[in-house]
Image 1 (cartoon, rainbow, N blue to C red):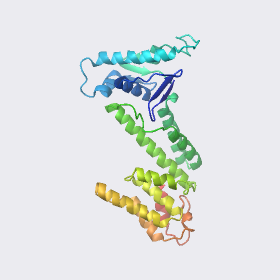
Image 2: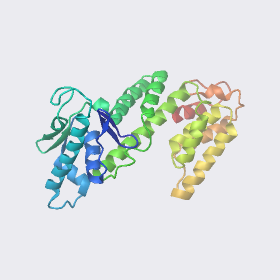
Image 3: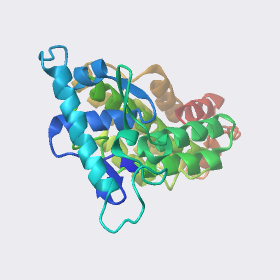
Image 4: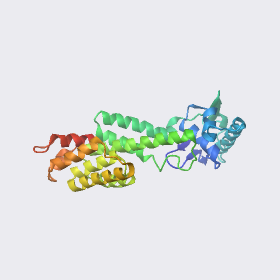
Length: 293
């Protein structure tokens, strides 16, 4: 089986889709896929579909939805032209894939066929590489993790209380991986290569201070000092108008260090993360730049 949750919902078995068109069975399958290999209780599934006011018929209706999912799965497992008999390891019955467990249900598939789980695996080892100072490996691994995304998670699935939390968690993990991958690239001296990416990201996320700080650092170390200062002023204005607050202390320190340094473009590359400040450049400027990445 192949399951994709990081974008439009895809679940295929032997090249046949098992994603139902009806909204509620679709929610149930998405939640089971997110927790592939684990048991999802009936209470959790009912909370996802009906919130805190399930109808009296909810347990029976849930069983009906599971039966519909199994029918779709059985159709995909018995695709015409496939000579393998059902009930074998290579071609199990639908009940062996969507399993009834005590108190709930389990999608009995390997987690690594689910793109969200693969994303989490790559992100974990990518973050570990970053923490170990292997920025080249971190950039590669985190880039592979981010490449699994095809759009917002479960963009075509109606989300209830449970799925909404899962989607928020995945989106936060995506942003964390993105910031870390950019930070790794900056530490590798690829500041020029991420400029256009950060320009788009800062526009898409006008209140995100971390991305703006990285954009400032990339601009500054590329010799675009006035643009880095302008990026800060734009962030400060947006935060003031939208939230009535000033930028955080680390971002303000980054800006102040850039103003105080007053270095020429040929000296600015010396402030790359992990590289000591050059003579004549205040050390706090280098520290502030390093904290941005």
